[in-house]
Image (cartoon, rainbow, N blue to C red):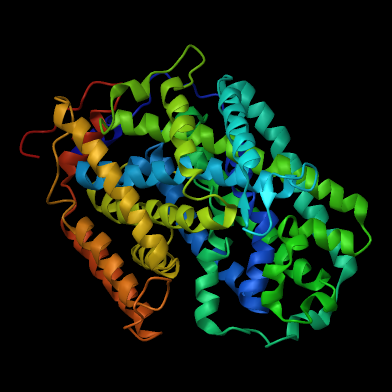
Length: 546
């Protein structure tokens, strides 16, 4: 009972942030982040990448993300702090793992706003020619300029107090839900059932193309954002009750919407559009600048096509705006962890971490030039996101043992099975992204480690480096890179490991890393110390002999 009493006292708190967001606001924060550009392009890319089996791909990805969402729901209720995905591994494994997963979280968050503005440029080319080049598949110079302006607008809107920002976001989210639902209903009236069995059957390009499509076709990307309620946890009212419910409600709603969208996209295609096979959908420039709007227009629904083109601004813009919010909160969380300068934790009188917000804008611009299109950036964002998500099952498994009596408003059923399963799923999705994406992500991480390392050398108040508790991490990152290089998903890979065996190796390797991490996790005393360092309350005194 002594350990329980200490656990109840040692709870982290976020200084300067205001709890002004209720259940609906928290749920809508996740929903508006999920329904962004992914719903505008995911069905099209899924169809031309793997045909009818894209339906199964959406289902598998949805189940995987639901498992990860349940895990985040428990962690968010346990420790409701802003930038939670950057801080849960910090509490469980200390600074070495915390630095890494914190940076994964930041990279994921900072790259989403650029990808959303690219989606606006791609659809916006219909109204304002010259924003997107259908020959190269990239935004133009004019498109770059408009992308920068749009990101600046996202940033300015984030300077509103959370209460006002929340009201604006709720209105946007209602629109973002209504349009996909109406699209499903309207496109069902243009249904061609024969499309589902044409040109190669269920898996026209084989199972390898099917698994590759899960990350590369934007399917996993479309689900990203469910964790936004966790990222804003420091500003959610009654977070122990509202956070788990918000996350679960959001992901279940969006999973149903996405699967039905893929059904109606395939069904609404005119059979003539498939006369040269599924892959021909990728090379049709009229489809590329607005897949759903193209289908509506081809069906004689010009009025609906125009509404979809309007939504192609609102949906990605809403998601981009929300990710600017979450990026600033992840930066705030890194500052609270002492991984970046304390200036990241500075908040204004409205409770906005303004320095972190401005830096999120400036650094987000860096990802525009090397990845000049929605398609080129989606793989990097997906891999960074899944790396971030991988920290949650590791943290849940560790914290269940480290602080077993801490209050948990929501407990994941079967956590002893779901946690390692979720970590394996994360490893497989990263692997499916292909070696070209993984080595680029690796370079990004190395740059991040160097910058964070330079700061921590000079920070006299930084937490001690917990090398033992994070000893598994470099082995995991390097090992995944080697397996990817020798595996079947590329380009730039060697394909030395046969298909099928490669996935088995990733699964076994992930399980080894998972249980290694659990074996070297921080002791309870150190967890309580790390939590107490971020508490607004006095640090607890451990009982004698504990």
